[in-house]
Image 1: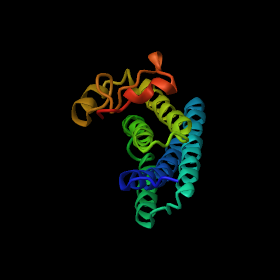
Image 2: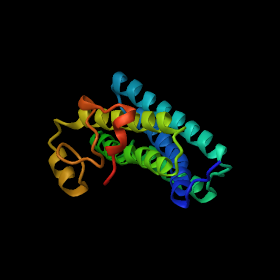
Image 3: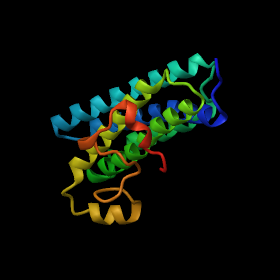
Image 4: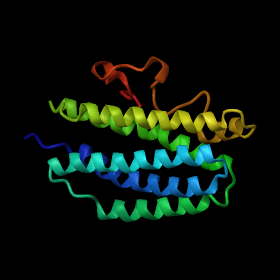
Length: 188
């Protein structure tokens, strides 16, 4: 079996640990909001992140790739800090920064798909595609929650994400099928 490149290994390890950070962050985010519908939606996103972590570990196990202790500790701390901060930074910022984070996460999975394909490995295509699309759905959910906020133009100008900027080139209204998804995140 062909072994993944160092870039693939690093990105798998990072994605695995970062999914835990995201899940922890969404635990705090869900607890900090008052709206029941938002709580349920954010809890579902947390569950999706735990599922992504599981799927990434399955891929890592196929190639005997061990999780990075450094990333595990780093992202554990990051996730817990973000989780706690959701109680003190108000309503807008957790939604904004979650959307911004998810926007970048989309390309992790499409980049992995592209890199695996360059090695002739296609067995992970479906799961990587599905996780990338799910991250895009998360991005869209968080954007929809804040799109009418007066704070959005200010944050978008400084943090480069929002109505006119994304860290990926996926439009869910014109979603490409798996077989034609190689253009996603190609230059991102």
